[in-house]
Amino acid sequence: MDSAPDTDSPDSPHCLIPAPTSTSTPHTPQGPPTRHPLHPHTTLHTTPGTEPLAALLRGGIGAATGLALPDGSVGRDRIVLRTSPEVAGRHGPEGYRLSTDRSVDDVAVLIEGGSAAGVFRGMQTLRQLLGPDAFRRAPLESTRQWDLPGVTVEDGPRFAWRGLMLDVSRHFMPKDGVLRYLDLIAAHKLNVFHFHLTDDQGWRIEIKRYPRLTDVGAWRSRTKWGHRASPLWDEKPHGGYYTQEDIREIVAYAAERHIRVVPEIDIPGHSQAAIAAYPELGNTDVIDTASLSVWDTWGVNPNVLAPTDNTLRFYEGVLEEVLEMFPEETSPFIHIGGDECPKEQWQKSDLVQERIRELGLAGENELQSWLIRHFDSWLSARGRRLIGWDEILEGGLAPGAAVSSWRGYGAGIAAAEAGHDVVMCPEQHVYLDHRQAGGEDEPMPIGYVRTLEDVYRFEPVPPQLGAEAAAHILGTQANVWTEVMENQSRVDYQVFPRLAAFAEVAWSALPAPADRDFADFDRRMTAHYKRLDALGVDYRPPTGPLPWQQRPGVLGRPIEGAPPNR
Ligand code: ACM
Image 1 (tube, helix red, strand yellow):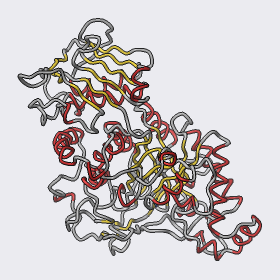
Image 2 (cartoon, protein in one colour; image 1 turned 45 degrees about the vertical axis):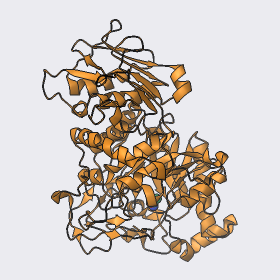
Image 3 (tube, helix red, strand yellow; image 1 turned 180 degrees about the vertical axis):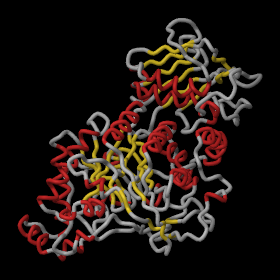
Image 4 (cartoon, rainbow, N blue to C red; image 1 turned 135 degrees about the vertical axis):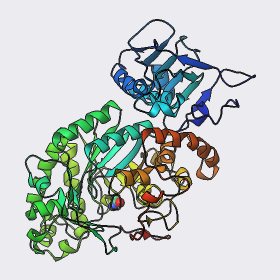
């Protein structure tokens, strides 16, 4: 890298996050790298396959700079977008080469992607090179001259799966907030949005054949305020759901940004909202399921689905609509949960015990495994792949199923060694609901202390994995459970700035954790905070929470060492 004195300027190629594979600047011994202006007459030239990106470039960089970027295919003052087999070969389909130094084709900006997705990732780098004001939605002044540092960036991702999971059940995030999060994910070069749509505390997706799922299941009358051990309640009703049109809009918006969406319909645990809506889904011979309402507090819930034929047909009906809303091209994986399913009701239920005998199974774990395998075959027959939390390994897992390794690395290691694809998302490292500092002023602090630096030093591929098993690690994902995040601002606080560190872990080819240059990342964060400010992200400031970000007197559940049990 060049050691020119602009290193700390927020529009420097040395301040990119996530760090690219390489940057090269023309040799300028006497001073800072040359800068190249963009003009009011600068045009935009798309080539086959990149046409849909024009609207995104104009809506993003165009809106922020006030540059109209009309179509234009001749002349030097052009931004050119094109796909390149050579870049695909070198950096993969999501890789790109960005040149602003006129070294290639003598145009103002050339972005060559391994595919349209790669061009889009390169556009994110272009925005960072224009400086923090390029993250605003309108220009601050009409007379500003925009320019770019002369640089060639070569770049491509380490992992194909770079995800964020957002729980919209515990606290609903209205649709515009979800679209905003897709923009934030895209700005960090992430490419998977895991959409946790159902849980005990709310069912958030319209299913036309089962209207009570949202009529009843999308609302609760009050909400625990703080960790479940807190004595406090928010007595306001809480709720909301996405209509099928909302979902299609979200999926299309993600697809434009080359983000895959993984919808999660959680079975057979975390299902009290569904049981409240349709009591016959529960274990009716053990408890009076008709008396259940949508859960208003947190934790692992004993009220789980009854593994009856009726339940299977019901969830096939749900999934039929889910598959229509989430098409195969952008949602090859469907998440069926499978986590934290207490077996007490199954043990007590004569009906369930009879079913276990009928099916010749060894017990409740095998019954859960049988249920998951049923949906694995059902999804496979429809061209999709099942993914579930790592409990789905218990009792045996269908060969094509993939695993989200959340309870640590162990399950992911076992799954990868058994030939299953794995997304590494261990709660000890990348659960962004966990507190990010040890101070008393963290809002409703739960779980482990995981600082920005801790996340930066997270390694998705455990060193003990052999090459063949390591190839099964599809990538990594940060998870955000929203029990103590009552609104978007609280979600922002937990997610940022740590998502920036996570994005670099997922995208960049970093050395082993102990050898990572956190000081350099932290230096680049100075620029990145300015970008987040321009985007309007309510991140946790490095100096700690602002007064309105604190929740004095509201109980959390800080944990030292032991696994957190939300
Ligand atoms: C989980 O955190 N229960 C997947």
